[in-house]
Length: 224
Image 1: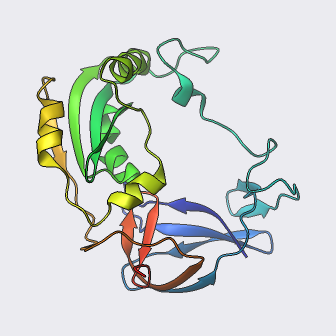
Image 2 (image 1 turned 60 degrees about the horizontal axis):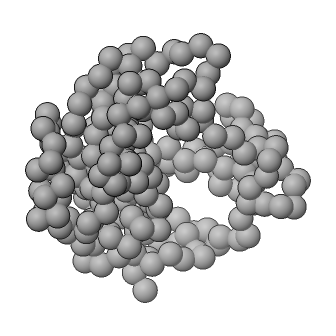
């Protein structure tokens, strides 16, 4: 058995879920609050290839990543000069700031219609819409400029987000950052985890599901 993917459940009526491969088939493992899990986590391996409900395992010993099955969404590298043969991001895009407790901030872009969903997919605690622009190319150009001028990163590592879980957002630092912008809309995001301290990374996925926050799955046994 191998976990080969996940679904945050954001942007639809789906529940969060892990995608588990068994004997070449992929099945969802729903993660509603209270769901009991009892997995022992082994050595990380490349997830191989997933096509719908079919799974082809990777035999590459250089796991957890390998050149054969590693890919990067080309738009994630864009800074305003389109890297595709033909630009196709013609819908309205949002340029935004995101806050992760207690005081980690980033700049980002997404399709305007997905802004709240994207913030929740990342596990952000606060969000602020700075600008709405005509397409993704303009948004990426602005993102690159803001990242250089502020300076702010355009990505935050999961480990950094986990360290801040159980803490409140430093509202003074957040407001100080926002004071330099003409903010169009603000977002306060809740995940129902009710944590008093940060969870501890474990080699066991065992316990009752408390909830998810972006890519992080929190179990009741994950607090040391």
